[in-house]
Image (cartoon, rainbow, N blue to C red; front, side, top):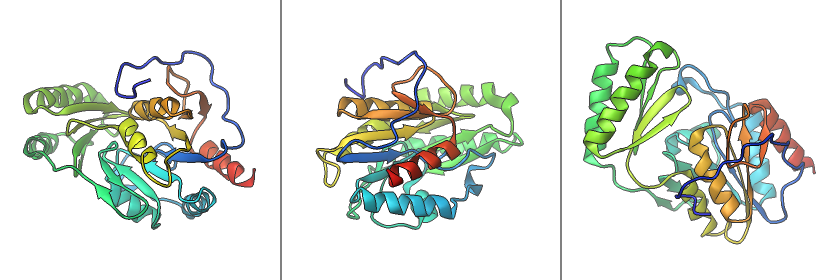
Length: 255
């Protein structure tokens, strides 16, 4: 299956993931909604000591075969985790930070900066709408103003078309980002390099943006775990929420 191509989703009740990882597994974890709960203000999220300790222990157990694959800016996640040697794919897979410290980050298109300025100017007139700027994207969050979903999406669609940007819907948000790359391509990039090469990928995530990651994991002989309510998905398994994810990961460590 081509993770960039049309998706064939699974429409059946999903079981809990196995209590152990495949032999020579690699682990790819979304951030918001998977390791930390979704909150009204994305800039106010705080990673708990439990999560930091868990990620550090898993990274050690897997000999470095762990990466965070997130829509967030990679530098933000790195600062929150406070850990070196963990791979991070930020901005929906376009910022690649490899465990050895090398990076692959494309140039920010001028059209993205222009669109971000327009969004910031127009959003300032609407209380509860938050603008999140990233190196390769700009997100419009309407979680605190759900009545503005239609306005937010219409604005993003118009700017995506006029500026040649990719439109990325998500949970109570919509994002414009530079064309090219997604969480699936990020997983594939990691799997082409040590220490991930030749391993069986397992991807956890909660949002539609994680579907390409699930597809990439399946294409390389692994599987995905959907976090949250049941829905059509590329994932083979499901966990109910963040606390269930953490408990499952702790069980993997003990297995």
